[in-house]
Image (cartoon, rainbow over all chains, first blue to last red; front, side, top):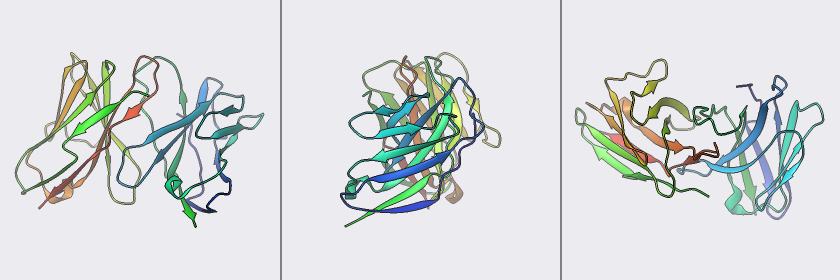
Length: 113
Length: 114
């Protein structure tokens, strides 16, 4: 799996948008960008994933640059409950259950009142 | 989304004892489950891949005789930490991918070895 680089920590004011960047300059053409988050002392939670088009769901938006070498996860209106470590992972998607996830250091997002 | 459960959520044991952790996929079948370990303020590290009907695959540096994995059915995998020692104290997390390939994680088991 391609390696990702994320800032170790970020702060965000409650109610504001949180923009979390991720660099994945060695991503392959068949690798997707996945985002998970881990709230303290819980298992990771899937957020969103995409290949090359921007994606949006009820939790977040994912913006992928045209060259696919970086992406940004956007939480449009951050709440205190969004405080967590956010992991950006690139991997081949699909029905192959053998593709485990390789976690990097992630970004520790602190949402402040 | 799919649900994965773990039991127990927290366990404290004496050094030298064995501890079994269960991971269940509640609403889907999983031929493969993954076991991760997470030490404080560190990221998740894959320990092993649990395969239904065959032996588990262990990552480099993980002792297969110490961390016994049994994938008893399409909805259950167990991790047994044998002869646990304080350095085995950690947060153990399992995950399972449904046929869609996405991964869903259990809530984790915090093991404390005294």
